Amino acid sequence: MQRRSQPTAELRGASAERWSGTRRRFVPGVPEMPECWDGEHDIETPYGLLHVVLRGSARGNRPALLTYHDVGLNHKLCFNTLFNSEEMQEITKHFVVCHVDAPGQQSGASQFPQGYQYPSMDQLAAMLPSVVQHFGFKYVIGIGVGAGAYVLAKFALIFPDLVEGLVLINVDPNGKGWIDWAASKLSGLTSTLSDMVLSHLFSQEELANNMELVQSYRQQIASTVNQFNLQLFWSMYNSRRDLEMNRPGSAPNAKTLRCPVMLVVGDNAPAEDGVVECNSKLDPTTTTFLKMADSGGLPQVTQPGKLTEAFKYFLQGMGYVAYLKDRRLSGGSVPSASMTRLARSRTASLTSASSVDGSRPRACTHSESSEAMGQINHTMEVSC
Image 1 (cartoon, one colour):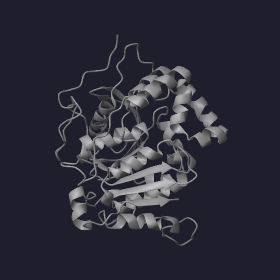
Image 2 (cartoon, one colour):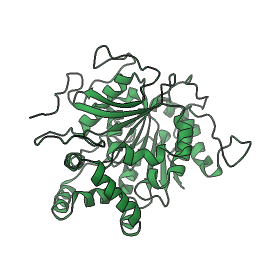
Image 3 (tube, rainbow, N blue to C red):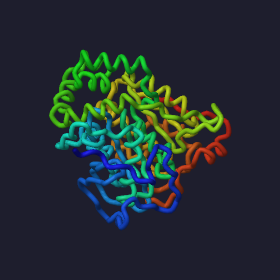
Image 4 (cartoon, rainbow, N blue to C red):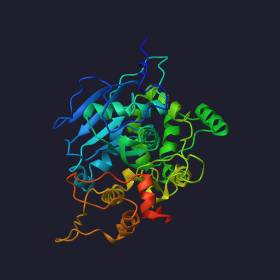
């Protein structure tokens, strides 16, 4: 009977050694990233194989955009609408994009054998350095949704030197309590896996009123994601622990995300309370909180244009994408008025914007931003 591979000494346990500036390799002889790795890859990690899809080629010293999907989806179902949009492609032409599929969730994945132990959420996070090192990325900007946002946040907590920034959509930093666990078990007895997943992905209003979208996802989840593998991922996500982080100054030796973070949630989304809770645990000088109206539980699907516009300003605040091209104006490289507020919220807390050629310092750490900002609170809530 096949089982997952055992962890190496370097990554055994969630408290893996932090990375230094010197690159370490998990597999000796792994080459530097060539000009183009475009295509599908199966990467060996301490906890088994990880399916990865790369789009584009290396761009100097710029970080890779690394995505991680929500439970019930894979990278295609979760991110195709966003990354296929014309506006997003204006951004991605400047970066290599690395889509990660959670084990066994990619289209056409083989079913895991009975008795297979699915990696824990901590272990899913500990698989990602193998991807970073395999392709020779110096660091990444993570874009995660739901369970994927949790994994990327955990990854950034364990390996902060590998993460340049995070966009966390529908992230819930809280583990399941006993009441939640019991309710989940009871729901499992009375509801199908698809119903439970859809209730996680969509708001009650969407389930009742947006039947076309919900039915489309119901069919795609059933036909493209192996249901046995999905059940394992679903069970593991619902067994997650709290993300151990607290806002700086709120507790002795408080630990939180050190990189710039953009939190995103739709109005009345199932994850809304969790995202608000996450915002309270992050450094306000490096955090932007974006609440999107009329976007429901999957803003990257229902409002890709608005999300892309916010992402452009997030990158600009980190020193990438020096200007936004407004297609409505024949002459213009000007930001649209609706996002100017978001841009201003980033200006003082991060390093100044420069060109997209990669010759820029990394975004400032918590200690650097605190020195620059003093006691001013720059958490920004924007409804758009």
